[in-house]
Length: 367
Image 1 (cartoon, one colour):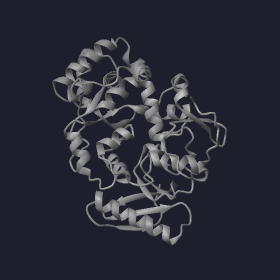
Image 2 (cartoon, rainbow, N blue to C red; image 1 turned 60 degrees about the vertical axis):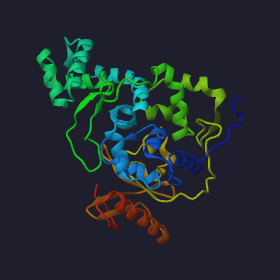
Image 3 (cartoon, one colour; image 1 turned 90 degrees about the horizontal axis):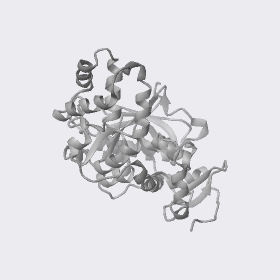
């Protein structure tokens, strides 16, 4: 039975609960593959952020571990949640891609003026055969499709192929310490058919439970923000007997797993350095559990996310690394002891993910 309690969870209570799920209250003794699965994927718009995300969350993480998983085709880079590139386990890629396919189909609709006369079913099959012969660049996909539909808009053809097919970026792209042009093939071709989700409707309730386990307590709108989807209320209602509910300070109903961690709001939260587009800051409709109202918008410059520093669990500044120097800009006056903790955390990050020992300086960062 669902709990009848409707306790109010303030921003600090939600913060500590979310940090606990996100493995940010203390580093977890967990393999990288397990963390990628637990977090339902890592934002991967750029190559390096997934490595920084895992360093902030896992004890003893080394970038070679995630790189090896990519080369062994146990994790993949593909467009899923919010139409953005993520690093997922192969199993989750098979589950989540069908879940968001409706949103990808709607995205194709935005380009319909450039696709007049194009049979999308034929386009998908033509593109599938082309990329399964060997991994292709988006430019090569575009040129191949233009041979069939020379009067169509080239960009619209490429977008349609990307949306209609479950395309993954093949290695060496995304592997730490290596470089490579973006080349694409289908998930099935890269990782095999395998098992996985039986479709969006069949898998949605399990995904709701896993989302709460990684980002809860959360509202329906929170999960819709994370997924880039709408109409998830019915799934939450079907699960209501298995969940507990709370309210935030504005009265919004929050759902949660009964046994999920909800630490005391006074639990200490160590400083953490997070890369641009970390899902911690992108996966709730109301982000005040991480972003204080007075700092709203300061973790972005235009449409570009900035690398952020968590201080006492909340957005407290931004950072940028250049060579062996890590510059930290804090948004408010900070005690010397806390700055020492921030510097120590930054030095550890540079040692693990930089070119060697480096220096941390506090100052302003343009932009």
